Length: 364
Ligand SMILES: Nc1ncnc2c1ncn2[C@@H]1O[C@H](COP(=O)(O)OP(=O)(O)O)[C@@H](O)[C@H]1O
Ligand SMILES: [Mg+2]
Figure 1 (spheres, rainbow, N blue to C red):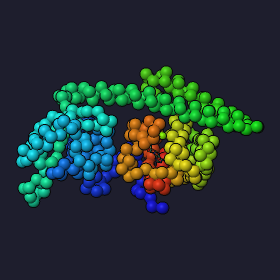
Figure 2 (figure 1 turned 90 degrees about the vertical axis):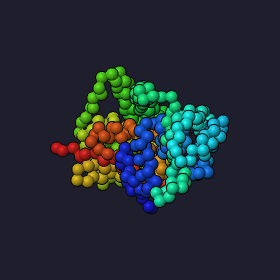
Figure 3 (figure 1 turned 30 degrees about the vertical axis):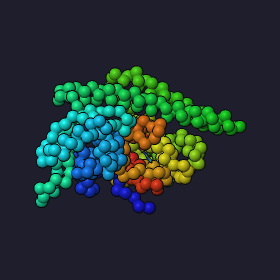
Figure 4 (figure 1 turned 180 degrees about the vertical axis):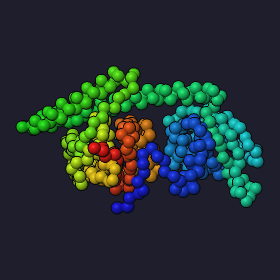
């Protein structure tokens, strides 16, 4: 199995190809989510578009490269704009026009366009456009950014809490179903359900104290025990999809300083993602240590993560699932960072994904 380079969540990969470097630079130049860059060939084919176009128009940059600019330009403005470009071949033009979002809505932009040519030639071979949302002066734009940032944080918080509540509810529901189906249900199920209800209790208490800064409740714990408990918690859900969870522990005792409930939350999120990515097969949970860290890897045989998505993994609201909210990994990353650790991901499309969590071993 060919494994792509491991990548740390939240740490963008350094340039792989010129194209990639260019996209990164492009994003720095256009500083702000409502701005993006488009490059066109002379016949109007999109040859490059900065990645943040997704935030504005809803298209993935890859959906647009190779297509014609008319796809994202309002029909009634298209002729006027292309005429302007034609007539001002050699100079920079500032134009206002409407673009079409993926959802069909219009979006008015101000665009500064300039012809581009090869460094050794005077003949233009394309056009580059710096596009920003129309009608915003700098202060206005800044205020909107601040407001939307505030809204985003509030939304993230609310959705994050809903997400944390959903996990215990799902497992309680799962165990109730299991107990209904079995003649002599295992008493252990009740204990787990009790634990889960306890978790819900903690979450609602957290809600009440949200106004105050959250305190990290840490103690020294055996990581392998936490992992074992989480596996037990999700085994029922995995079995429903004919997925087997296999543990391979190189160490039986890996003491870490942690907030147990938060670390469980991380493991549940990652394991649930693995289950969701698979139709059947085996998820291997591998535990080991190196000089200073306890390592746990969740290795699945699922759909994998395409290269172009790897950079987005862990960003709020990035989800490829119809019912996903794209908050799970963001929360995981935040929690593991709080523990002085890291999460990294390796993935091969159609073969599987490995998430590795690294947490410092507690010193006696
Ligand atoms: N094990 C995995 N296999 C394949 N894709 C994954 C895996 N884990 C995460 N992903 C991708 O990362 C995205 C974000 O995950 P997450 O933050 O947990 O949000 P959600 O599960 O709500 O979509 C998922 O929608 C999926 O595309
Ligand atoms: Mg998830």
